[in-house]
Image 1: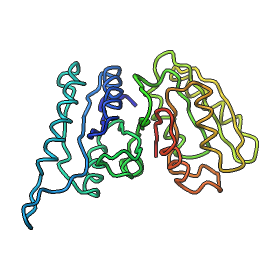
Image 2: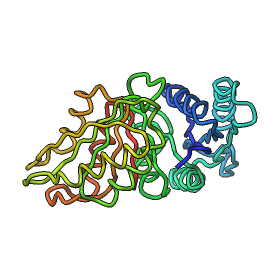
Image 3: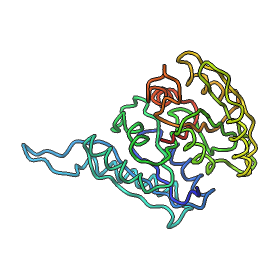
Length: 270
């Protein structure tokens, strides 16, 4: 899939600029349009019992977000577009972000980290589950100027892993050093499946090495994150919200674990 239309979530957090800079780098690499979507919770302005919207506080936050976006995207010209959710309730904010994200080729979000910023804690999970689009999650720590030069594909016998394989190819940089880590539950990994994945990536001009891991307890996601660190990966690509044949991993629990503990940018496909 060609990346021609990217979506990045904007808010008032200190980490917003880090994911915005990564989104701009990807837009430049792919000659893509970049939509910056400001969305965060805020109370209505009240005078006695009368509530009005938007409040002065929300307007100030939105204008500050617009200014940051304009400065970061100065080189993109008319390929940069700022939009405002213009809603303050948690449910409304999530609904607006999900709806706007559905027409993007890829969504770029920041990891929820407990920072005192007005963004619903479950926004990343809801966008992964409900937008129908691949979601690139940027960690709450570290600077990632670009991704895809050392990608790691997490492969399992699951539909979502196949979706992630297809979505992740677009983020792989030319000449990348890629790894495919195949996980199996209590039995020998299927080498035939691994060979098909490696051959598929090769057809797209991506040279990848295969590794396999056998996981018998609820250590799968830690194992994948550790393998990503061993590979010095700048991107992990993984299927989301599917137990992938691991009956001891409840549907979605592994995805939620990675959302909380990711140490590098992770592309989630569902």
